Length: 267
Image (tube, rainbow, N blue to C red; front, side):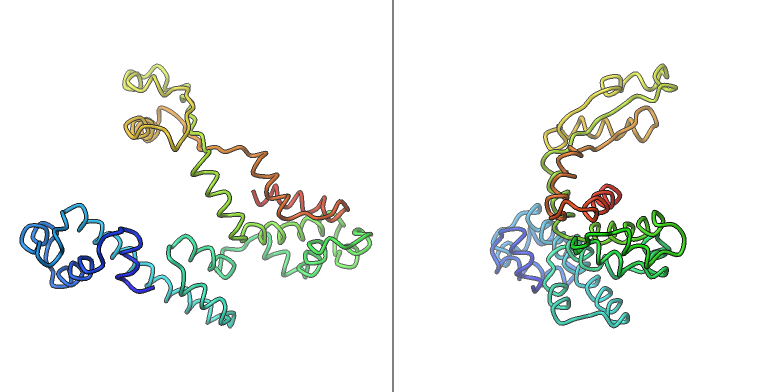
């Protein structure tokens, strides 16, 4: 996607006005100047609308710059396929782009990476196939210590795979956006602090995150930053876990038991 269509999609403003505004911005014109003295070129866009164009222009430029870095990093690993390149180039936000890059990030040493070095990825794949009848017998072939340690290593790899699934990450984002509760608890050692008293209403409360008034959220965050309360953002864990299980487990054998444990770890 090019710059003008990107801004048009996110602002719903006239394309001609966006194009001319971008040209004026490239000439280092300021927002107040454009809104007051270049109305004929922008189609009477006001400061708020021009500000939105500036924001999404910046977002687009940051996205395109990040795409270049991601493509280069994956290419250096000899892992860039034509399909993956197209998905990266077509990404319209940093979140979806980072989800695509996630499996290729060179992370600090993880338990999953340690398990791979112990040659447990083939076992993880067999467990994910969910077609094994005697899992312990198969796991024994990969065992250097105990069976349980071997299965735990395979689970670390499976948990990483689950974590990298874009559909599951987007489901959880959706749950956070729509159903999250913000809850607060007072820090007991600060509850009698004189400065904390103006935040008494937030010592123990719970509210829907997407319905909370902005002034109340700001007050809660201020109370947290000053150390008077602790804040949590929570969703229905059981519902989320059940969804992940339904999207991942399709058997009722020993493999399913191992995947179930890996799901809890990933979550």
